[in-house]
Structures are given as C-alpha cells and as structure tokens.
Length: 343
Image (cartoon, rainbow, N blue to C red):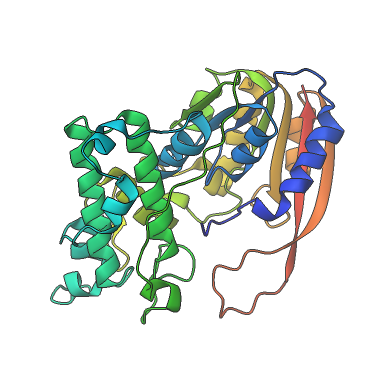
C-alpha cells in the first residue's frame, strides 16, 4: 500500500534500535504501535513473537489491524462454504453495482455532475461497490462472523488501493488512467500471522486517549511529521472501509467529517501532544521515529524526552518519500531519527 512515511524499508533499522537500546530478555514482551498506519511495524514484531497492541485513529487502518494483527487464527468461512461459496472467487466474479464509489469517484458516475472525478476506472469502482455491499449483506445475514467481516473489508481496502488512479495519496486523481489503475481489481487473501500463546489487540482511538488505558514494555511512536493530514490523504480508503455514505466536498470528494484531524499535524500543538503522550505512557521504553523535516525540532524532542528518563538518539539516512513524482525536490534523502527514552 502507498502510505506516507511507511517504515517498510527501514524495518531492520527499527529492529536494530529495539535490540540495541531496550535489551529486553523477557519472553512476553508487549510492543505497542500506537500510530499503526498500514501495520507494517506491528506485523514485523508479531512475526518475532512479541505481544502486539496496535492503534490508529483512522478506521481503515484499524480494520487492517483487526485482520492481520489481532486475528490469530485461520478463518474458515464455514457458513459460506456450506452453501458452496468460496468467498474470494465469488466476490471477484460479482457483477458491478452503481453505488457510492462509482457515483462519486469514477468518470462514468460523475461525468454529468458539476465535478468529474476519476479515482478509479468505471469497472473497478463498480466492482468495489458490489463487493463492499455483498460483504455487508453477508454480515447482516450472519453468513460471516466479525473476524471474517473485518478480514474481507481489509482485503478490499488493500485491493482498491492497488488500482487507485492517484500519484500516491487521495487528495487528487490523475487526469488519465495510469497503467495499474486500468487493470481489473482482484481481491486477494491477506497473510495471517499465527502465533500461539501470544496476545494481540487492535484499537481505533486517539493515541493520547488510549495511552492512559494501556501498558506494556515498548511503545513505538510514528506520528505524522508534518502538516499533511492523513484523514484527508486517505479519505477514500476510510470511505471504502466504513461505507457510510458520507457528506463529501471539493474536487477530491473529501469527507467533511473533521473528527480525525491530528494535533501532530499542527505545529503549535504537536510538541504539547507529544509530551502529553510520553508523560502518560506506562511503558518502560519509548521509541519515536521522526525525520529531519518534521515540524517538531530535534532539540525540542530531546528536551521533552529527557525530562522523563534516559535519552538516546539513533539516525539513518533514508531515501525521501516523494508524493509528487514531477516535483523537483531539494533533497533526495532525509535523516530518519529514532529518539529513544528509558523512563
């Protein structure tokens, strides 16, 4: 999945810092990824045998966490299979339906409207609507349980993102369908990591609220670095996951709801939010990923974290994220810092 600030390319670096700084020898380590995004970091440490707490304020991220972090067993889809239905094959072969996605985010559905949008090809938009509605129908008819429901929606979110007609995020669409957006969407099963005798929990809360309710060993922080708002950048995935027919606005059809805007994207509020999170954390070790272009300065981070225990900083040069492929960026690389605190 295309995601701003994804840590996929530096997982080994994060692992090294965890091992070098924390040096935990206990067997049942509780690792919390409290700004989980696509759950790349949580999945990595789940595979290592850590107990995982995953959280994100965005619902689509939470649904992915329910599917690949909290879920710890093979899903059988027994009710469907008793009727001779293999869910992925069945959903992939549905006829399209003119629903919310097609009517608001595809050329065919918006061509006669004031604003014409093309976030998906007509075929893929019709398929997204049909699949999403069928999953909801199965749930209402008790043909799938809650785990199977979350898993299918997470699979749809992932599949939809692969055929989106964007440069990266969903604040804008491309004028012409790009190659990947022209391909027929295919729903595929997500990998389930099964680790017996471990506990995994997903939350969908404001991190600064949740931190007062949980405890563990390692708290990993990967908050927004800058003013790019994730609720806006990923509004499409949020709408596919929720399928709640939201009020939308503007050229990109962004959700009007503003309840998920992060203080970490607001320069005058980010530092106070970070200190509040650290102060209330019932975790021995806190690791904060933050690069050299973040709206909180390195010095301010060090000052705040040092109030609460022993501070250390690691750094690594990292190829920068480029949301606009045509833009001439001043730097090819950023410095990815991991600020560490032993409380």
